[in-house]
Image (cartoon, rainbow, N blue to C red; front, side, top):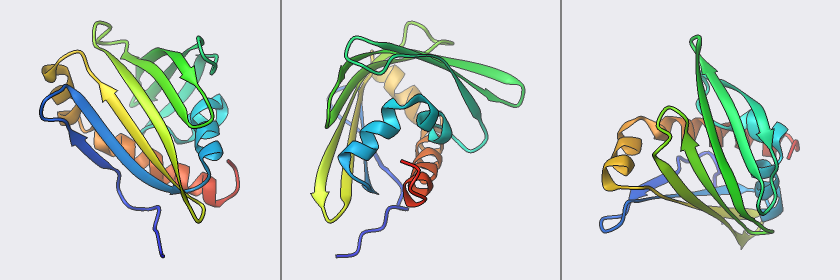
Length: 162
């Protein structure tokens, strides 16, 4: 079976709930993907679109911990923050807030499914406050950041850096 990890993520809106579901396969183990999402230095190297740089302000990747980072693009800074509710071997549950819209908090659940043969499927679900907020995310160009970021993560995995 030949599986490529350079395909774009599948991003879907739930018709009945204000949820965005993202699915993507990686040539990696679940442990590598959990590390890529919880190690602040690794996370900053791959998160977001190619046009930004990001830096950690706070990072405590454990159940009950919190995080904050700032991204910069074109002289503008954008802050993001949240709390880690669960961090385990195959699942991360966290909140996500873009500081420019502090009342729009999403609950994100990431699960890492071992498909065998060195492939792991990432299932990400973002539960937004409303359909309006969810649709705003979807129309914001978020898929560029998701796909650029995952392509960078593919390179880090291929180079043995994760």
